[in-house]
Amino acid sequence: MVENFRNFETGLDPFGRSWQVSFRWQQNAISIRHADTVDTKWDLTCDGEVMEKVVALPLPALLSISSAQNRAITDGWCMKLGGMHLIEMISSWQDMDKNLVTATAGEIEHYATALAQAEREAA
Image 1 (cartoon, rainbow, N blue to C red):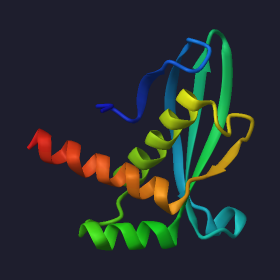
Image 2 (image 1 turned 135 degrees about the vertical axis):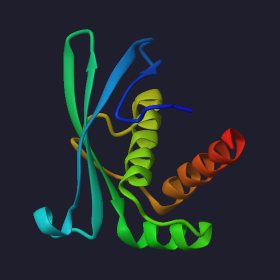
Image 3 (image 1 turned 30 degrees about the horizontal axis):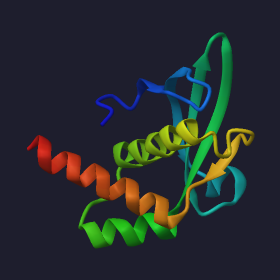
Image 4 (image 1 turned 180 degrees about the vertical axis):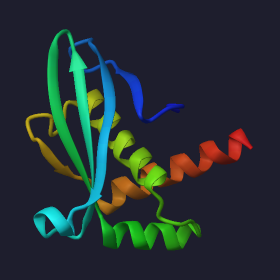
Protein backbone atom coordinates (compact mmCIF):
# COMPACT_ATOMS: atom_id res chain seq x y z
CA MET A 1 0.00 0.00 0.00
CA VAL A 2 1.21 3.50 -0.84
CA GLU A 3 2.29 5.39 2.28
CA ASN A 4 2.05 8.93 0.91
CA PHE A 5 -0.72 9.47 -1.63
CA ARG A 6 0.32 13.09 -2.19
CA ASN A 7 3.44 12.05 -4.09
CA PHE A 8 4.28 8.47 -4.99
CA GLU A 9 5.79 6.25 -7.64
CA THR A 10 3.82 3.45 -9.23
CA GLY A 11 4.32 0.98 -11.97
CA LEU A 12 4.81 -0.95 -13.89
CA ASP A 13 2.52 0.00 -16.74
CA PRO A 14 1.98 -2.51 -19.57
CA PHE A 15 5.07 -1.04 -21.26
CA GLY A 16 7.35 -1.68 -18.28
CA ARG A 17 7.56 1.95 -17.12
CA SER A 18 7.21 3.45 -13.64
CA TRP A 19 5.23 6.64 -13.14
CA GLN A 20 5.62 9.46 -10.62
CA VAL A 21 2.18 10.57 -9.38
CA SER A 22 1.55 13.90 -7.63
CA PHE A 23 -1.72 15.01 -6.07
CA ARG A 24 -2.71 18.52 -7.23
CA TRP A 25 -6.13 19.33 -5.79
CA GLN A 26 -9.52 18.07 -4.78
CA GLN A 27 -12.89 19.75 -4.96
CA ASN A 28 -16.60 19.18 -5.05
CA ALA A 29 -17.40 19.02 -8.76
CA ILE A 30 -20.93 20.34 -8.32
CA SER A 31 -19.36 23.79 -8.09
CA ILE A 32 -17.24 23.54 -11.25
CA ARG A 33 -18.98 21.17 -13.66
CA HIS A 34 -22.38 20.53 -12.07
CA ALA A 35 -21.56 16.90 -11.27
CA ASP A 36 -22.37 15.09 -8.04
CA THR A 37 -18.77 13.97 -7.51
CA VAL A 38 -15.64 14.70 -5.58
CA ASP A 39 -12.89 15.35 -8.15
CA THR A 40 -9.25 14.57 -7.43
CA LYS A 41 -6.65 15.98 -9.83
CA TRP A 42 -3.25 14.40 -10.42
CA ASP A 43 -0.06 14.96 -12.42
CA LEU A 44 1.58 11.83 -13.82
CA THR A 45 5.17 11.91 -15.07
CA CYS A 46 7.23 9.28 -16.86
CA ASP A 47 10.30 9.68 -19.08
CA GLY A 48 9.62 13.38 -19.60
CA GLU A 49 5.97 12.78 -20.48
CA VAL A 50 3.47 14.60 -18.26
CA MET A 51 -0.24 13.80 -18.08
CA GLU A 52 -3.01 15.41 -16.07
CA LYS A 53 -5.83 13.19 -14.84
CA VAL A 54 -8.96 13.95 -12.87
CA VAL A 55 -10.54 11.02 -11.04
CA ALA A 56 -14.19 11.68 -10.23
CA LEU A 57 -15.68 9.86 -7.24
CA PRO A 58 -19.50 9.86 -7.37
CA LEU A 59 -20.94 11.22 -4.13
CA PRO A 60 -23.81 8.68 -3.92
CA ALA A 61 -21.23 5.85 -3.97
CA LEU A 62 -19.07 7.62 -1.38
CA LEU A 63 -22.10 8.11 0.90
CA SER A 64 -23.17 4.48 0.60
CA ILE A 65 -19.69 3.03 1.14
CA SER A 66 -18.81 5.39 4.00
CA SER A 67 -22.06 4.48 5.72
CA ALA A 68 -21.47 0.74 5.25
CA GLN A 69 -17.93 1.07 6.64
CA ASN A 70 -18.96 3.51 9.37
CA ARG A 71 -16.38 6.08 8.32
CA ALA A 72 -16.54 9.76 7.51
CA ILE A 73 -15.99 11.08 4.02
CA THR A 74 -12.76 13.02 4.48
CA ASP A 75 -10.40 14.76 2.09
CA GLY A 76 -7.68 12.23 2.90
CA TRP A 77 -9.96 9.24 2.24
CA CYS A 78 -11.09 10.66 -1.12
CA MET A 79 -7.49 11.42 -2.10
CA LYS A 80 -6.49 7.82 -1.34
CA LEU A 81 -9.44 6.39 -3.27
CA GLY A 82 -8.55 8.55 -6.28
CA GLY A 83 -4.89 7.55 -6.01
CA MET A 84 -5.80 3.87 -5.88
CA HIS A 85 -7.89 4.29 -9.02
CA LEU A 86 -4.93 5.89 -10.78
CA ILE A 87 -2.68 2.99 -9.78
CA GLU A 88 -5.20 0.61 -11.35
CA MET A 89 -5.46 2.77 -14.47
CA ILE A 90 -1.68 2.88 -14.92
CA SER A 91 -1.17 -0.84 -14.37
CA SER A 92 -3.92 -1.78 -16.85
CA TRP A 93 -3.64 1.30 -19.13
CA GLN A 94 -7.44 1.45 -19.03
CA ASP A 95 -8.86 4.95 -19.64
CA MET A 96 -5.39 6.49 -19.92
CA ASP A 97 -6.56 8.26 -23.08
CA LYS A 98 -9.05 10.28 -21.00
CA ASN A 99 -8.39 13.36 -18.88
CA LEU A 100 -11.51 12.87 -16.73
CA VAL A 101 -12.32 9.39 -15.45
CA THR A 102 -15.22 8.45 -13.16
CA ALA A 103 -14.63 5.54 -10.81
CA THR A 104 -17.55 3.14 -10.46
CA ALA A 105 -19.22 2.34 -7.15
CA GLY A 106 -17.78 -1.18 -7.33
CA GLU A 107 -14.27 0.13 -7.86
CA ILE A 108 -14.59 2.60 -5.01
CA GLU A 109 -15.91 -0.12 -2.71
CA HIS A 110 -12.95 -2.33 -3.63
CA TYR A 111 -10.46 0.47 -2.87
CA ALA A 112 -12.23 1.42 0.37
CA THR A 113 -12.15 -2.19 1.55
CA ALA A 114 -8.43 -2.46 0.74
CA LEU A 115 -7.75 0.80 2.62
CA ALA A 116 -9.72 -0.38 5.66
CA GLN A 117 -7.79 -3.66 5.65
CA ALA A 118 -4.45 -1.84 5.44
CA GLU A 119 -5.48 0.45 8.31
CA ARG A 120 -6.41 -2.56 10.48
CA GLU A 121 -3.10 -4.25 9.71
CA ALA A 122 -1.16 -1.08 10.54
CA ALA A 123 -2.90 -0.68 13.92
